[in-house]
Length: 431
View (cartoon, rainbow, N blue to C red):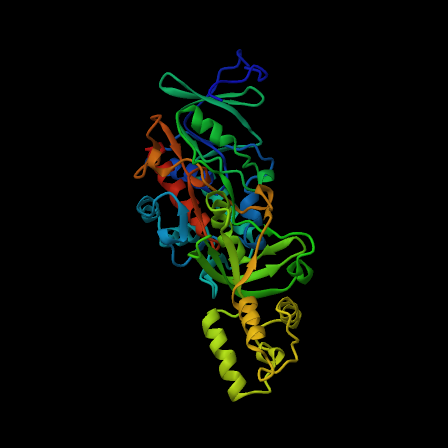
């Protein structure tokens, strides 16, 4: 992908456009990089062009947070991310922290509100507000936005880069920023093409590039698929084949017609996907009564059989579980919900404890990149200079956003990575 394919016209008679900085990809990271590059030299506007193959810019921004756009989270640090090393992620985040994000959007009239979860949304509850602010900031920074302008190739040519479109248009840029995203939501334009550009310049990719923040599939006929639409707070644990808890999270779990979704499932999905390769015996456990552990649940039930012998499973869980879910779990444990705890045999109680506190699910897969919110894997951060996001393989090339091996948990963390890495890359490329 380092040269223009023979099927692409070259428009040899048309002089190429020239730019100081060409940003490939105008999503969240790309727009922030372009804005930062345009602002990099006070008193002089760098010639910055942002290129995107999509007909409509900002598709991912517009659908994020159910159309409200979860701009960031009130508290962000390296522990909210996976992929590259924590110290490397921390250094990039520190260059453009949450406070700077809030200030940046306030500059363009976008006030953010904090919800109980810690997520920050625009007070308008409209993602369009966020996108409009970014586009206005880009215009004011002198950025030329070109779309649809799908990049077919990027190649080094002397002291510049030749960027060629699928239609044969050419731009010669002193510096290039790859902000092409990963492979999630390919309809938005992030179809993985950027990986080809990066590897053509000598970069490597992690051994696995997989969907993250993605719903999981359960087999046909699975009882939880019959509960489509039911959501409950649960602890989800990834347990190794040796019984070690590898990671866990507590949040809402949503039963769907295809399997499981909801924040807890999305957060653990990338870990489960990787564990499938490295430890095929790893499993997911659901605890439907968090934060109660299975041992504590067993003790509660034994104590209840003495203190309230007429208590039944139905009354015990009435305020904690939806009735349909309770009845399904009771059936899985082969226990009548009307059975009193005094009548409950030891074996029946143990089955209930396993089902309520450590129910094993065996997903058959995930819904793939078309339904993933982000990509896990990509170009390792070790291959860029963290203070500038410049490539260690190719001077003048910068990388930011989802193309890098950094993915955050649900809650605005991936946007914060986009803002931070994009700001650093743009500031450095435009200087």
